[in-house]
Image 1: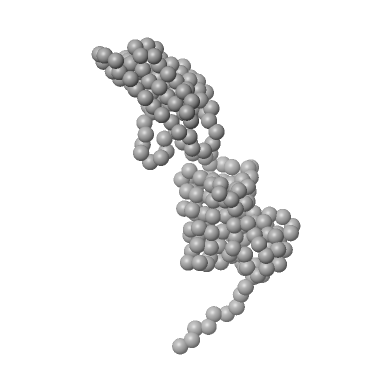
Image 2: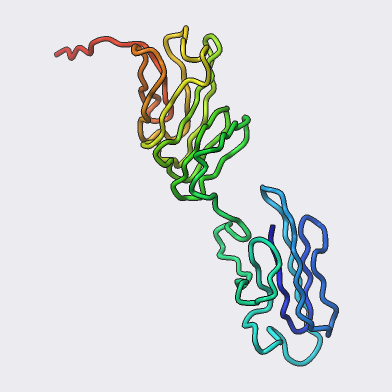
Length: 226
């Protein structure tokens, strides 16, 4: 949920997802505040500014900008708002994840993305076949792999440090794999996470030139021939 405050000579129009959420009449320079509830994900936003005659820009003499924003509910204190400005990196009107989701579970459907927001996040349980991007797992984060016969879930990691992640079975059946090797993650695998709850003969290896994380019971010796 975002709250907008208008402080503009002469007027402005804010349209989100095709719906007008704030509209100032030409020459009517009263300060206006509106709260817009939005669902997670991308939304279109359109801003239009109008000048009739005379001066333009912030008009009240107190608030130093024309459009301000804040996350959450309405406040009548203008200092609670920040100037609406596009930093040019795609982060306009986006929010980061809280750092602690240690009590929460994320079941990522294929095609869905969990963006860690560039920071360190504790994830209680991660399952599914979606994508995790942009960040670092905090200690205690768990990826639970669902195994069904010769197949398993496979999360894609893009730009994520796996050093603090632990891989565990999703249920009792998954704790008793029947195949020798499963590809349980793909993408950019930069670090091998910890493994817990599987038979001792299973281990994690990074394959595919760093693009696959495999759960495998295969072993053997390496011979160097000259």
